[in-house]
Amino acid sequence: MITINPFSELSALIPPLAMQAYVILMVIFVAGGTILDMAHKKSAKYFFQNSQKAKKSATNEVSGSEKVSIAFKTATNEVLTSSEFCSTKRRVAHLLTMYGFLLFIVTTVIMIFNYSTTSNTPSILPLLWHLGAAMLCVGGYWFWFFIRVDVAAEGNKWYRVVRADLFVLSLLATCSFALIWSYLQASGIAGWQTLFFGLFILSSTILFGGVLWSKFAHMFFKPAAAFQKRITKADGSRENLPAPADRPEQFGLGIKREAPRHY
Amino acid sequence: MPTFVYMTRCDGCGHCVDICPSDIMHIDKTIRRAVNIEPNMCWECYSCVKACPQNAIDVRGYADFAPLGHSVRVLREEEKGTISWKIKFRDGREKNFLSPITTKPWGENIPKLGDLEMPDQNALDSQLLCFEPDALNVDTGLPVISKDKLKEGVYY
Image 1 (cartoon, chains in turn cyan, purple):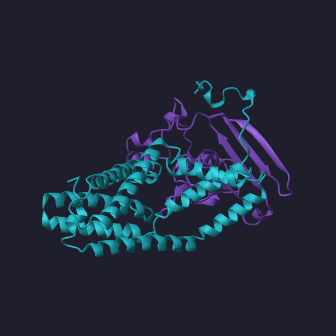
Image 2 (image 1 turned 90 degrees about the horizontal axis):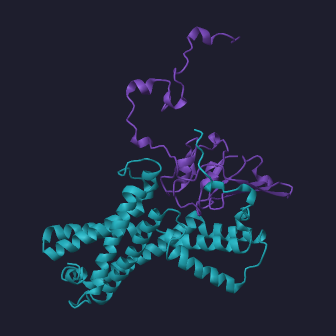
């Protein structure tokens, strides 16, 4: 199952051109949804105003080469390794879902556009497609049942669903239905296979078509916010925060001191 | 001066929800970011401001004097055991203070309320709070005041 390209089997039922048109439509949905989201929330305007405000209170100028270096650090730390998370569990779950999503999407596009008609797909592609979906499932279900703030901090039950869950639920449904569909296809169970393919398409349409209402666009906004945060540290404006403390010795061990035992 | 959250900085970790003594910091149902659900009830303890690992929570005055340009910003550095304060007055003066952290490290001694048994109806109807009277450490229990005594010393 994991070395079979599910889309080449599907081409007997759906023409490859229709599959490719669907992928292009989803890309348009994501781009359009992100632009509408930006216009609706005025995010770009906010970022511009915020950077202008930060410039006013800047104590030193950030040169072009420094900005490039900051962009590189943002890419390697906040984007590629999710270093902004203070909880290791959240960071690992996020990395699993992020890289799982990338693997799943990239291999889907390659298999649909290059190998949907031939039966000799390089076995690494379906392997990575299944691996991506499995990583999404592991990270996503871990997040959904245990790490999600609604469960961990708010104490709500895992089955309480609100609009903020649109992104993670549609993502989980997409990868879960994809795996089930692939399994049923490899087993040759015709009726159920069609049902789960339909569910897979429905959930992925909600995922990519619901950008305006979900937090899908965070993958574009978060790197911009992380870059802006690093810039404010470099130019000294520090979002109006105090400078880092110079650890005065009279404070002793501070939080590392012996724990109180008087109560 | 109630708290508010910068949505672009908050990553929805829930530390403010855990620490807020007024139970007014909660997670928004639409965007899963922290939000002060009842600014009127905020008593400006700065617990959430200090606890936020992303420095995403700030405090602002009510609309009548907020535009005057003052600000109070806090930076908690647990590894150094310090809390830094930056106070900006509306006439442009700025003061910086540094104080040691005197509480226990973050995450220690959180009561596991979920592990407790569900209280029965009698306990729910009682005036005692959770853990009381044991938590008060009073061997003889709480003092009981009769209703007649309550009238004493009250003049209308």
